[in-house]
Amino acid sequence: MDFWSKIAGVYDIAERLNDKVYRKMCEITTELTPFGARVLDCAAGTGELSIAAARKAESVLCTDYSEKMLDVARRKVHKGFFDNISFERRNIFSLDDPNETYDVVIAGNVLHLLENPEKAVRELCRVTKKGGKILLPTFMTRNKSDISRLLLKVYGKLGFSPSTEYTPKSYVEMLKSCNLGKVKFKTIKGRIPCCYAVITKE
Image (cartoon, rainbow, N blue to C red; front, side, top):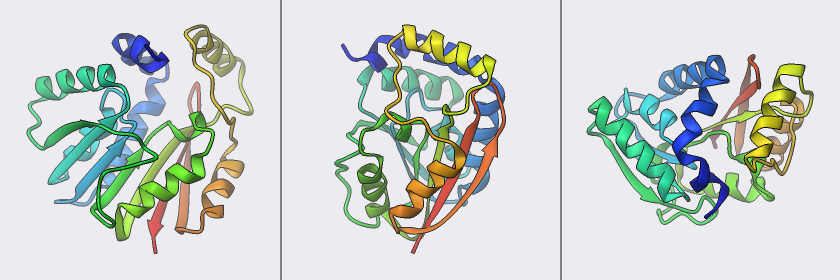
């Protein structure tokens, strides 16, 4: 069983340790989702950003590589009475969709975990319509505060190990190097800060 399947049942508890950042991420996701949009959420975990997008979207496909994470997301969606969210197990590097399928594509807090984040970003862009948005909030773990260092140490004992530790500058530079469209970003301060980056596909 992989790390994410092992912690699926307690993942939301870990989220609450950085609650201010997660709440702001959800607010921004709802704001950036057009009414009536078709949305794909990759590496969705327990579905918080899928739910945020579903408040305005016509449909949201909530996907993750871990079926146990998706089980938790299904229960949360059922409790919230959302009828516009569906679920599938997906690999972020190899999506099953045709080119330019979605108005909005989300991949939250996953790129820092991947050995080849550029490949994932290009695949996310492939399935995004021209003029559509790719929402890429990601934790910044390079310049750690004492609190974030402690939290990451706790996560590390559970098996969490990022492949790349970004600052906002290095993260945005990585995204710009993909040459897929305009990149805008906002830094969300918190125990573990987040850089909420958005690519508008050209």
